[in-house]
Image (cartoon, rainbow, N blue to C red; front, side, top):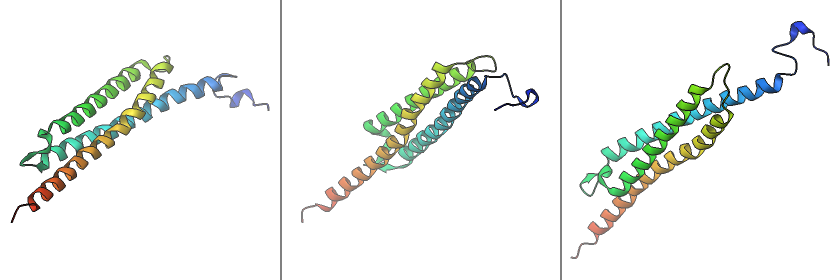
Length: 141
């Protein structure tokens, strides 16, 4: 198919380069969205753990919950650092295929784990509540 020179966008034969460039930018955009979702999950998990009380103290004071929150925080901060560093190296004249691939790969695993950790935090509360209610109802008569 012949395209008149006036209708060409970019250089002839450069379509694949433009497409790959757009994929890099798309990967960064998706990684940034995942970072926002993971950060929101971390905020919700932290707020819930501070407000919810079990065994007379905030859920956040229990060791396993502190571990979940700490691991989630570390993942979110690692994801943020990677995405920001890769974004700083990508520009009109600069490509960073390895960096954008790494951001895409890491954001997938880190973003999926944040809601899971939040669920575990909530599940730990439900388990603690059921344990407390069953032990209080088992008082000798």
